Picture 1 (cartoon, rainbow, N blue to C red):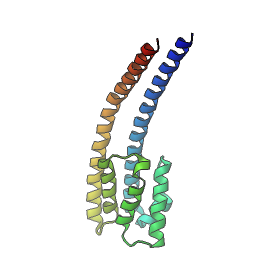
Picture 2 (cartoon, rainbow, N blue to C red):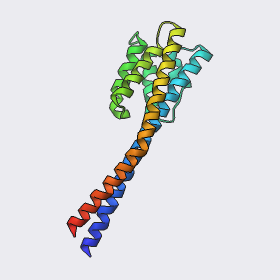
Picture 3 (cartoon, one colour):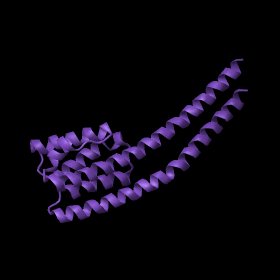
Length: 172
């Protein structure tokens, strides 16, 4: 009876672990979509209202991800206080601080940090061109992650259940 209960617990843990990996992958994809929405909103509001980026980050732009909203508020506060003159450096510094909290890969982090240059550049035409290029690269990254999502979910589920089965065999 004890072995059966242990086996059930092992299988439940394996299924839970597979579910956790699946959720983490889906959350990462949702974060990439939220980052894309943030950049598009900044571009649209910036061109439409002609407000400075710090005002847009502090008041107008909101994302579904609370971590990104916190980052936007921190960037806006730093720019409004005028502690640092260069908005691009503030953007990069704040996103670098939050990189681990956001669980971004190196490529994704570099892409988002480049967006700071596109938002705080010298000419509107150049900014728009750079931001369009960054959005295209982000779209490509999202497509890649979506493609990997199904594969990784199947692999994680299979490996978790196989390892759970092996532990059950060892227990019996």
